[in-house]
Length: 201
Image (cartoon, rainbow, N blue to C red; front, top):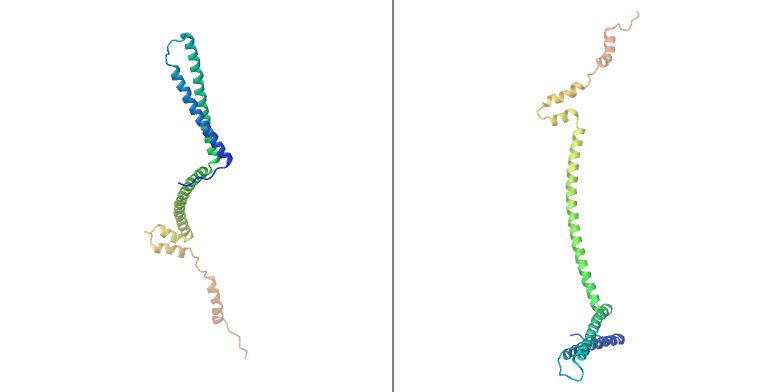
């Protein structure tokens, strides 16, 4: 068993006073209780009448009972003083209690951190899946809007003939005007069919 450290003189004196108070109070309780038991015995008749002797014994019992009560209250006060002394001066026990509380709080903090990390991972996975679903649906809608009308309709209705779909742009395209190429050929016919230059003889 480790040797206890030497207490300061003031603390040593205080502990000695506590020890003396304890012994005195216990001795007072024992002595008064013993005297009350002795007083309860019936003695032979003396020069004092029984009524007087009874009153004297009754008063003595009350006094000794009060002494026992006072000694008991002193012991309760001594217990309170010892508790206060331990709280204020027992630094190793206080430090040990603080260390145990710190360990409990650290364990609780680590458990909360683990739960928060797990919750973060679950939320990240759910958000990733939601983003994938959102962007895939958005891209499909954008591709359908960017296609030509015929091809978009053909993708929406696969039973439609592809030739019908291809005929729509051909019908919609304007035909070349007859005036353009014919106007370019007209001067050639005018030169070949018309009168040439007149020769003077």
